[in-house]
Length: 258
Image (cartoon, rainbow, N blue to C red; front, side, top):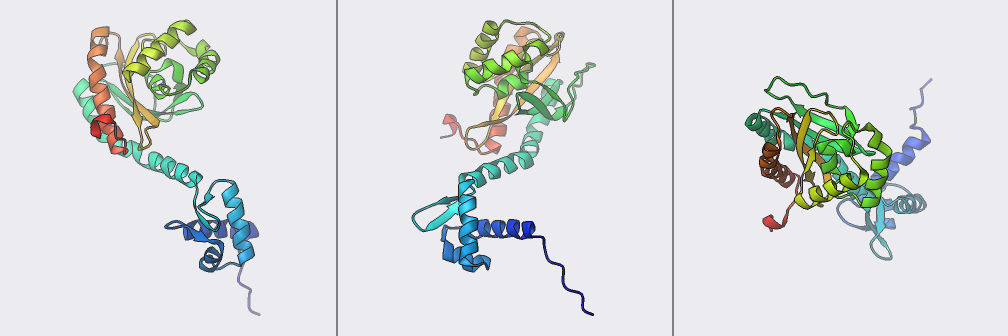
C-alpha cells in the first residue's frame, strides 16, 4: 500500500502563503490578481492574505489596486540590519579606541529602560568593571545608558528616572539629573559620574543608523584614579569622533557629510 505524502499543517501553509505574497511585491507593487497568479493561490485566498497583511502594516495600498511592502517590513529590515551588523561595524573602531586609551570600551543597546551590553573590550590597566557582555544595567545610571536616552522625550525620561532612581549608587535629585541630561543632549555625549559604581567614571556617545535614530551607544570607562574630570573632558571629542565613524558605517549622514 502506498503511503500518502505528509501535508504541512494548515497554519504552516497560511504562513508560507503570506511570505509568498510578501515576496511577490518585494521589487514592485502588484495587484491582487497578479499576486494570486505569481503566488499560485486563488484570487479569494490572495485577497484575504493581502487584507490581513495590510491591516498589520506588512503591506500598504499604493493606489486603488496595487499593493507594496509596508512600513512594518522596513522596520524589521532595519532591526535585522542592526542586530546583524552593529557589532561587526563597530568592532574595528572600538578596538582602536581601546588600544589608544588603555581603558575599558563598551558597546550597548537599550531595552525597556535598561542597558544591554553587546561588547566589552577589557582595559589594559589593573582594574575591574562589573559589566559583562549580555548583562543589564539601569540606563539612567550608566554612561552608555544616558547616551542611549539623549533623544527620549522628557516625560518618558521622568517616568524612567522615578522608576529606577533607587538603583543609582550616587544619589542625585531629579532636577539635577535632568539638568545634566540637557547638557549631555546639547553636547552629544554623556557621563557616568559614579551613579552606577562609586569609583567608575565613563564618557559615552550615541550611535545612529541611516534614519538618524539612536540604536546603540559606546563608551570609555575607567576608575577615578585614571579618569579625572580633565581627562573626561579631553575624551569627549575622541569618543564623539569614534561614534561618528561607526554611525557613518551604519549609514548615518550628519550635516558635515552633506
